[in-house]
Amino acid sequence: MLLLVPTTLVECVPNFSEGRDEAKVDAIVEAMIIPGVYLLDREMDSDHNRCVITLVGEREAIEEAAIRGVGKAAELIDLTHHEGAHPRMGAADVVPFIPIEGVTLEDCVAMARNVGAEIAKRFHIPVYLYEAAATTPERQNLENIRRGQFEGIRDEIATHATRKPDFGESRVHPTAGATVVGARKPLIAYNVFLNTTDVGIARKIAKAVRFSSGGLHFVKAAGFLVRGMAQVSMNLTDFEQTPIHRVFEFVKREAVRYGVVPVSSEIVGLIPKQALEQAAEWFLQVENFDSSLILENRLAAVMSGKMAVGGLRAGVEPFIEQLAAPTATPGGGSAAAASGAMAAGLAGMVATMSRGKKAYAQYESQLSEAIARLTLLREELKCAIDADAESYNLVMKAYKAAKESQDGGRLINAALQEATRVPLGVAEKAVEVEQIATRLRPISNPNMSSDLTTAIALARAALEGALANVDVNLGSIKLDSPEDESFVSQTRTRAAATRAAALKML
Image (tube, rainbow, N blue to C red):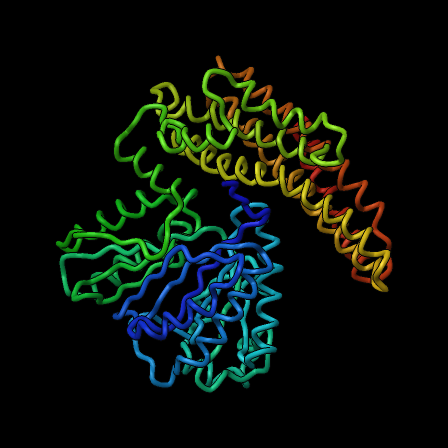
């Protein structure tokens, strides 16, 4: 059987203010399962009176699924009779979109805005945008938007300018409240239970660990009483920068100050495999650990054709032959993305093989930071290989559709703009890869300097190829509206800034 993988894959993790009535949660989930959308997980918590649903699907389908879930929650959940440990402002409290495959964080921002506007239009529920989709810096943090919860927002939304929603009227839905929609990186909802019923201790530990009060970057935390135990409830918003094992060790150390210890921890929803690999590497202290040492990872890579046992040529040859084929895609944009991904991979290899060695112990934190960032850049650049080809295919489709549409120019311009965003993102990431590789030179094994030289050369090739694609696409956009002119102007400014950043390293 041939398994067809969607060209775009987006995760959506809506949180609903219901964790006690299973029938209501069943109905909400059922409303969201439409063609192209798949349920990965559902979590209900009666103490928090909240459920977390994890969905994944194609871009357009998952937008509609999220909208339907919000509508069903508005039918079934009445916040005027809702109580629970977790703060809430809406029946559908928060709806984040997370890029997985063939989409960028910027794509998810556009999705969040589309969904937010539609929720307000269909259900008369005011919507606020948060995280990467936020329209003001203050709204990047969810806790700022949710302050005062449903009751506080209900009393202030019409009179306080800072409470004005991004979509909809300045009044909450009488029973469904307001909803927050956004775009973000993968988040880990991680809770640690303590061997005490004193929730005050959990709150003190939460204050110490969360970034907003001086703790760890990318950690949000609060203290609750859950299942008869004090719980430090946390959201890890960037596990690559602040890994889960570091958070656990921090909580454990703080707990000792109050004479308590962690007895267990839990994951709410799903956790990226990479986060567990990081924890395994940390606690087991495996020398020169790499995710490819894991049997299932190696097997998946071999079976998908990304790695060949007994010869590297067999793994890379199909892509090279696709480039050589007399077809428009994959082309230079995909090749540029592949060059950038290889650059990130090489630089990451140098950092990984230097970290843990006695000669470079003083650079441990810098090497770890470089590895985490290069891993993310490598994955994003790999996604851009297919994304570039797909965006070009959409341009071709737009030119064909334009022949039968009165709005043909608009269709073509929209497709060209998307086809420009992908290589521009590749160029910006390629510059960052080169910057990191350059910083690695004095803090890594000098015997691997040739690998860094190759990585830098590949990153520069990725930059030049990607910017060439940006220029070609911009030149094809017709300036039919102020929006088109603004897009071209802003893109040229970003491209110039990217090239300037690269020139500083020469």
